[in-house]
Length: 608
Picture 1 (cartoon, rainbow, N blue to C red):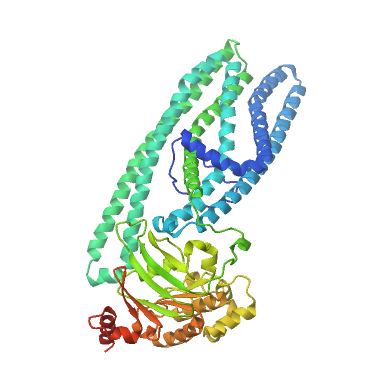
Picture 2 (picture 1 turned 90 degrees about the vertical axis):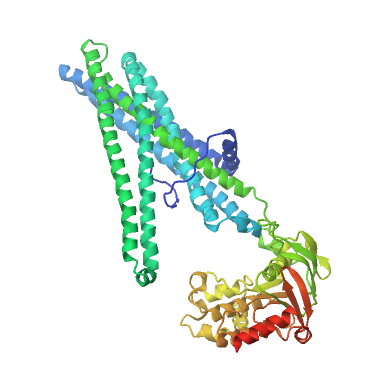
């Protein structure tokens, strides 16, 4: 039976990967126990009350048997005093068990919530401070799963699974002891039959679940056919493939039916087994117990107690399979979380005060024989001996065909990656002489595809400088040519931009990004093809805002449209990871057989 969650977990039910119970997996689990240390007293009290509530619960079958024996004697004597006394004892036991259970649940949930809150915070902080190479090699969905599903699985185990496991263990041990006290002969009989029935039920149940899972997977495949067909309905109709898609869907559904019918046959057989095996065992025990009553070896009350204890023991045996599977899932989740927590993160502090600028940059930037390949693709050299300089306040454009390494230059300046050879210099000092916070606090980027967070326009602009005043935000928006369109919205600066900024046009998102960069007031500015996907009017407004943004600061302009960088102080032309030309527009356009001249003529032809 599924256990109701007692905590804040809201993760969707899914089949999490399991881990074998081994020394290594247990060590990972103990690693996370340090988070429980501040709450160990309440956790210990929760365990104590768990034991008390279980012990109280185990007294009930004995008292129920005593109640029946007392009733039998009372009928003969006509005296009900003993029945009343036993009834009061039973109600008292129930009351105590309820109180114990209340405190056990309260303290276990408190320990689980506070422990998991600490783990969640550390895991999230670890995630956002990991280097970019980590995110290049891991899917966002998988990482999100570690925050949600894996941690929720651990939370469920602290709150429910651990308590249930200990409770069932106590019931199994004490139940077996009580069975032997009531009747050794009946105990021997039931121990010969019940474990076999339980084990068979467990393995047969697993087999049925596998068939059901196959049917679910096949149904998911058929739903994929429906989704693909409806999404591409224009193509289906254009190629007159309605019949083909119908046959494809029918075949998938027929396989679902076959698997479902196969599962139904096995489930039917399972019901027969449970009916004959389990209830047959109960009838056999009851029959033999009745015989023992008839020969005065036990009383009717003791037989009743025995049957109740046998039910408890059988339930405990059957529950261990699910609990064992839950523990395996928890160990698997723990391994993945500990693996993440053990990753080496960037030297960024969780305390904002520690991330303030301590070493100012004037704006001189140099690439000194920089060579680089992405760690996930070491066979491909992206930058090969790159050399160029940008003096403070200069506008340096970087151009070249796709795959030349332009965007990788951006990642190097922001120190998302470290070069394998050569070095990047800020004001003549190696990048390693500065902290990451110093460099990133003084560098801003306006990318081609602007990502806005799902809050308000005001919040998105203020992201460039947390804690900015409303006047500063409005002034930045005005300088970015964004104030007028913002005020055209009914909610003004409180307008919600939607997920990833979908409620704004491309030009509006670009100007929000420029306002954000203006608010940051960087020493070095990176424009990564900031106007390449805009219409003419939006490009004009954005270009005006960019001119305002580039004033009095070093600007690195990654350009696709060469017409936008003719006024640059220097143009660096790249091809296949190498710098092949440098100079002004006028110098480069005069070079015969030059790459820049070729690209310019190519774009000129495309506009005619």
